[in-house]
Length: 123
Image (cartoon, rainbow, N blue to C red; front, top):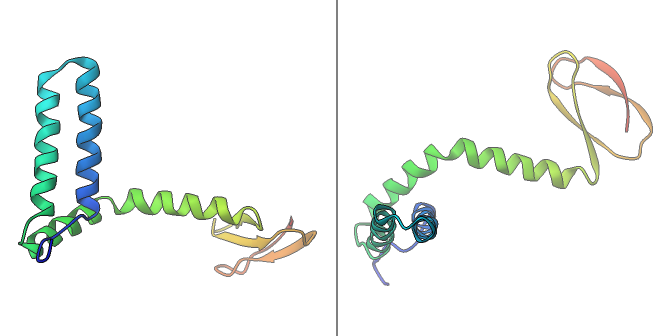
């Protein structure tokens, strides 16, 4: 594999997408889906063994730019879930800025760092 491009995010996406297409083709007995699945797998292997690393990296960057919004949404959701164990997350009533407050402090006054609005919440 020396000098070859290898596997990246776009390659993983095309392999998983092709495998899902192959499963759907097996259930529905559609020949065209099977052909598309095989084309996707062949393209993925072509990308893995390619020596044109600059072109493959440019393709991966384009894929990452297109999926940036989706990936950041899920990253933020996962982050919020892990922080809920130790913190409360409130929104400022005036500017809707999210504010993170530690749990277990009782009734506290929170000051919004963006608009300096003060409001009272239970921690």
